[in-house]
Length: 248
Image (cartoon, rainbow, N blue to C red; front, side, top):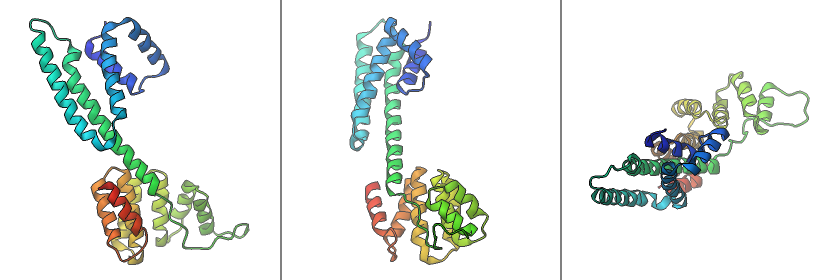
């Protein structure tokens, strides 16, 4: 016989798609015969459905409303059950529901950052060398950019790393970004920001901003976007203003 807290945990695992097929079947079978589990599941399921329907614009106000609603409900239940034992899941419901809502709010914000990243990220174009397709005499640098242009970023990165040219740093950083290794990308971009020529400052700041956004560091991403929007250079200036307005 499981405790009520264990039933509560099982419901969260089921609703969060954290069970394998065998566990789901076992849970669903028990759900049909266990009234206590069924009551807890209905409560959490209704809450999850409600959260999915809420828009991100008013999720904070919904958080406050839910806190008040659950607090009032719990207080009312306590008055009407004098002398009775209140089920553990009833006591946990307010804290659990608020935790679910907080998690949903975090998940929504993370998803928004990911969505914005995908919307604005494009690999920096090859501006260093000319590529002649079909040429049998291809240098290692040309082959690296062929792979880069074909979207083979892991192969391109290996080749870029074997070539000692500082002007490849931006391309190396973009490769890391495409491989979802944003800390490594930022390490390169930060060193470029401190040492390289001013003609590509917007490019550096743009990719820094996107990596920071992907990592969830929105405040620092906004700083980089603001630098671009106030720059006299044109690279991604309008995009930076647009993205900054969206984040604000």
